[in-house]
Length: 412
Image (cartoon, rainbow, N blue to C red):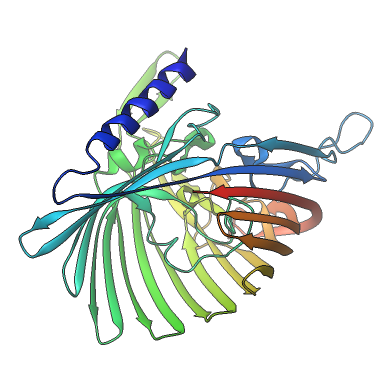
């Protein structure tokens, strides 16, 4: 019944847009793709979308006989990245040209796959040297510089990955572009108590993520850097049991962090060379390693203070060619620990990983309206014991996953 309702909505929306395609002062450009992904993993891994969105291998988990439960292969075939979209150019609003985009796929939400989901939905006002965007699109830390790889994770967890509701303003001058954005959370959220993802941590904070950046562009080069502020409130109340009853206390403690990125890209008719480095704190809403630890707990009311995990992440991507496109990708993440001692209670993703290394190669074949490709990648994670003194990981052991992906895309 759910799929039938979705199909009805799509048909009705398509019919409405078709009937209004010739509406005065509006231009509509419909587009989409049918994408088929097949993949194989040699080891159980941290993943989303039932393995289609791959991140890194899981640590050893031994059974009663000492055999590693995570040393098992898996693979599957999906068309979840099939998508439909429309670009709209509307009438002027004062001196501003107006644009809009609506795009969806069948990823669903959480573990609910095969249902329609909004990817992009925004309107944009464009002046000669500035533009204002309101709606959901790529997070500013995802940015214009990202790896060209076949895995739909697009380089995560080395590369930030998130589409988020935002208000973004860009101003261009003399080859430079200044960017400022207020960003909220929706489909991609932070991890909090119980290692649960939820939008409530940012919502209770009443403060959006704040991003500011500056880049410089020439005919072939793009250079840029930015800074992001995130302030979340993990808890709004605490509970203390004194032996006779459970008492509830109000709390408003938050954790506020700064993260930084710098990037470079070179492009010409045949080459793409791109790289990005990030010093991140608590960027789990961007599918990156990190999080935060509980620094202290008040014995009277259970109120907590926090200290963030700092993670350094860098990647390099090189792609050559037009019709045949070979490419390579390399990524490295390092756990830099916490700035304060902690109680041992940690909320986050991969905080017991000392370092993460990935290397891969791909080959794509491009035709008008078609793209075929195969990609191999090897990812190694060093797991160990977290220190309560500084959050760093010690006595690490290495596990590795070999991943193969095949992709066929019909673009219309």
